[in-house]
Length: 386
Ligand SMILES: Cc1cc2nc3c(=O)[nH]c(=O)nc-3n(C[C@H](O)[C@H](O)[C@H](O)COP(=O)(O)OP(=O)(O)OC[C@H]3O[C@@H](n4cnc5c(N)ncnc54)[C@H](O)[C@@H]3O)c2cc1C
Image (tube, rainbow, N blue to C red; front, top):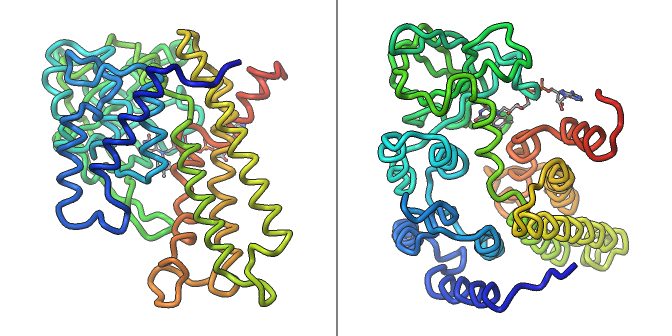
């Protein structure tokens, strides 16, 4: 198996690096007008929506170019390419794949220009991992769907202008994911209420969303009625090698090594302690394994083959590493590990503590570790269904 890049891909990586040398200052110099400048140059470069077709305003990049770009950006802790988080991650790809020409004209340019936020209405109070069991109802009434029910954990709901929503349009259908439809819903629709939820770190990043007879025009349906499940899965199957996450984890490990160099343990730099070095070496090995897995997935995608259940291996690694790197960062601080960002004495402004509290997105988003283990057990190892 050859993991080397072709000369064209190496040249592309070189171009990306030169561009970043010119336009991306060190993290300490990214204040003032930098965010606006960055937003403008990356948009002009067509890096926002880099893999989207050029005729909708994207960059028309290959899977490999996209992975190289993500890796380079992640290595340098670059700010995101565009701030329309969910629009760029999956709503845009879903609209490009399944939307009408009118929907593409209405939404894609705004997503690329990060004009507003989208939120995702999938999870419900009694439905998370087993999403296909969702209950929120959409009942056809002439040229509208009338939506009644509740969603929960809806990130960005308070700030979003639109929601991509999954509703049940057919009850009792087997298999149950067949009766689900995808709707694009304005967040200022009459009958829609948002109630923020406070998380463990004290932020209100997500919310409950209530629908009380919300009328959604039929032209806001994405794809066919009853085909919402396929749309959801397809949109998430974009570039899934996880190479960018690897670069992010490597950066975090570098930071941890630096912390071990400056912190002391029994009067000596922690880095001189064999136990600390062993832990760092173990993290390095696991991150390297993730990278090689990612490169295997990428190779398959480049050949036009599908990558399925195996990506769960990297998701599981990433979730565990994310938590364990943060916990080790706190451990290395000794008693200072008990302080948070608000304290003058906190190490690195409480960076590791924030990391430890912010694990939810990586660990739970896209399927919890238990769900990943089930996928690996059943679909890769062929063990009996849970
Ligand atoms: C930070 C954050 C942001 C989120 N943002 C959004 C959002 O924007 N939109 C949205 O729709 N949702 C969002 N979610 C919700 C997220 O998708 C769900 O929390 C996730 O799917 C898990 O569902 P649940 O919370 O209902 O847990 P459950 O599915 O009830 O799981 C509870 C526990 O049981 C375990 N479990 C479940 N099924 C099995 C099984 N078959 N075998 C073994 N163990 C199992 C799980 O691993 C977990 O530990 C967000 C969550 C977080 C933490």
